[in-house]
Image 1 (cartoon, rainbow, N blue to C red):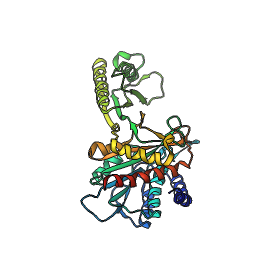
Image 2: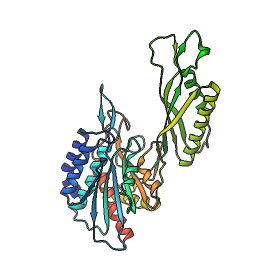
Image 3: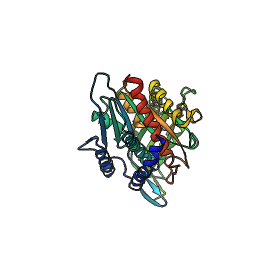
Length: 381
């Protein structure tokens, strides 16, 4: 298998470089979709695209029988929009370019191996992971209806995994973004009793959130990540209106529900205390991971067969979120896990100048290919 991967390296690297140099943000990944679709078509797969959204699925089906299963291999597609060396632009600083190259590499390797697939493999390229909406769209489009096992992949920072290591699961936490507004009117600084100072309300929200307490054995956090109050440049005007955003994180879905409830209680209490109109709405929500034991064991074996026992790391916990976990939330029968790929990634995910060891691409391709084949061998005998 390693020899065949070696023969594919130039093609895989070209794919990665093209995707890296042509990033597209969430819901705009149309050129990326077309690029991937052409590769899928060239390899002879059935290709499914959508009229209203980017994203593409390649389907490799064998002759159907009662014992056939369907294995899904998923990649996200979107880039972030951020400042890079003084310029705001789309940028693949979360590794989705690598994820796409890896999943396409799995397809190319299986074809080069002339692999016999006793079932169906779906190569799923999903848009809009960064805004937490793409996976739900794939569910809505019925892409997941026949999936039995689902594998994903995500590059990991060097602080979590080093090059030559791989994890058989990523235990992402739940994340929620709340958007809030204080609705009021400006006032003169000489008469503060005639208005509500939105900045004081903001300060009270931040202070009250410091007092939130949940089970200390479950990691969680809540923080204000954006605030804007007033539009005047005059220092003697009290701003009566403001907008703010809150980032909530919890390692379990149950803890997230508790966290949301406590934040809502604080907002309601402060609205009464300050006698102001204070509203809050949920902008996005991503569920915590549920790693299936059987899928995790199959992935762990593939890691060992590729890297040896020293390269295998069990499931790792991270406060980061991933909309991959909507799949198992919406379709609980799916047995899923996500490969955590050690690649000496620095300085960190979402850093505008993120970099990693590209040789990790070929390691991931081998691991996931072994996982796909191992899943059929272990379930279709």
